Structure formats: C-alpha cells, structure tokens
Image (cartoon, rainbow, N blue to C red):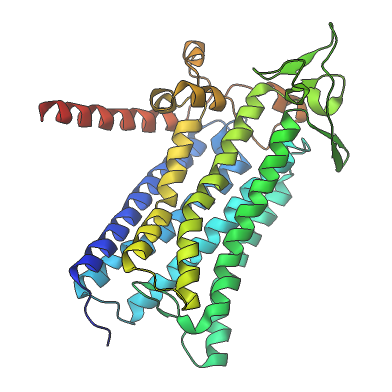
Length: 397
C-alpha cells in the first residue's frame, strides 16, 4: 500500500480538484444556456445556437465537463491521503481518458468544419453533420474501451489504475499512453493550427482557391475604381493585406468573417498553451531519466484542467456582443477581435455563422434575430457583477 501523502501534496491535489470544479460549473452553465437558447429560438433563424458549429462546441464543453468530473474525484484521494485502486479509481481513470480524447477530437472537428465553411465556402450538408456527430462519439468510446477490453486481457494487468497522484492509464502501458491519448492530443492541436493559419491567409486574400485546389499569391495594390476589401493596415507597400473583388474567391469575404476566423484560432492556441507544459512534464516522468518534483506535476495538471474554464472565457470575450470583452481587453486586442467601442452604438445584434448559410449569406453575415436567451449578455453581466463586488471589497479593505 502506498504511503500517505504529506500535507503539501494534499493541498496541491485539492487545488487540482478545485480547478476541475471551476471548469465543471462554467461548462455546465454555458452548455445549458446554449441548449435553452437553441430550443427557444426560431428554427428559421440564422442563430449560432442552432448551427452545426454550436452542436460541436457543446460536445467539446461536455468533454471538458467529463474531464472536470475526473478531477473532482481527487477530493476522495485527499480525504484518504493516498490513491487506492478501487472501483472509484477505475471510474476516475476512464472519465479522464474519455475527457482528454473527446476534447482533442472535437477541437479537430470544429477546426475542419470552420475550414470548409470559410476556406471553400462550402457549408456541409446535414448528413455530414450527423455522420460526424455519431462517428466521433463512437470513435471516442472505441479508443476508451480498447484498453480494458483487449489490452488488459493480453497483458494480464488492469488497463486503468493508479498513475502517480491520480488514476489514469497504468504505467505498464507506456506506449498506449502515447498512442491512445497524447498522440491524439498533439495531432489535433497541430492540424487545427495548420487549418486556421491557412484560413487566416485565405481571408486576407493571400490564397486563391480554384475548386478544391489553392495556391498562394502576392496581390498587387488595386488601381482606382476597383472594389476592394482592405484591412486597417493595408497600404501600397503591403499588398499582402488586401483582397480585391476581381476574383470570386475573395470578393465574398466580409471583414466580420475575418474576425470570426481569428477568434476561432484562439481555441487550439489556448489548448496547446495549456497542454504542452503538462505533456512535457509527463514525458520526462515516463522516461525515468529525470526526477520531476510533485509540485511541478500538480501545477501543470491544474493548468491543463482549466481548459474547460478557458473555453468558456474565450466564448464570452470573443463573441461580437461580448460586453465583458470590450470591458477587460485592451484596445489593440478589442480591435483584433472586432470588439471595439464603435460596436456599442450599433445595438446588440450578433453576427453569426450557421449551416444554413450560403456563400452570399456568409459574406453579409445576417444579424441574428432570436427570441432565445442572450447567452453572452447574461454571462458578461454576471462576470461584471463579480468584478464590481471584488472592487468594492478591495476598497473597504
């Protein structure tokens, strides 16, 4: 039986479980409001809550919540002062594996969906959505069940069990740890960044698309009289920042679409930032050549566990109607995300993308008119209320 944890590890694991609780609460609240908004909004409305992208995003939040539940179960280990291999340990390990794999795959799905929607201006049909929706969930379950149903019988050792300061894939399955989780996480993050980078240059007019083929181009500065979509920093010396309407592939692009593409790039970027430190630490631990302090392992695990909370924060701050984003972000970032104060005077309409949109609808991005709950406004108001209370308490002290 393992020795009882010292007080320092107990505190660290307790902080890790608390981070999981924060992610769980935030993801559940946002998921609930997206679902309620989808149910109450008109079926003919170009609403984010009724789009394929929203369904994928809810799946991502669900996986974040499952991952958070596995972290919350660490409170049981804290009360015992150690990790014991029992039924609850197996449940925690399975939930952790399910959450990590599901998060990686749904981030990749969102990246591919956004890429085809904006890069090729080809909204996928409904049968593609249902195929992806069912296929990804089946793939997640298959990956999770391969170990306990097949590999454990071959090796004669349980697949899930104690793995350091929590329960996960046992140390006897080092290769499977890379193949069935870490490899998928890095593959998803890298592919997503590649797709969003291509999309970013496409929307700036630096990529010309013909059918399913594309090539990079350096666009000349347009002459007087040609219709042009320019970024704020376009100039004759910087033709990489312009897009003329002489070609069909770039004339359809609206500046609002560029803002959405930039915002979507934040999700894989944030995921990589949170994932890489913990992965490096775990690699060093698995190699056996380097002794990594327990405090470093717990810190990186806590940072990764905040992934669900980070997804919710990014959703709140980067939505076009996000009051909190205009309140907290500096002017340079507000301009980059399309949250400048000039937008305050144009009402609370939201620019959204949905699977109903045609290429022309994507260029104009119709304002959402819905009877559903304004998710971002509610969450932004709640966040501002908390900040105001904290400031009042600070002044009193």
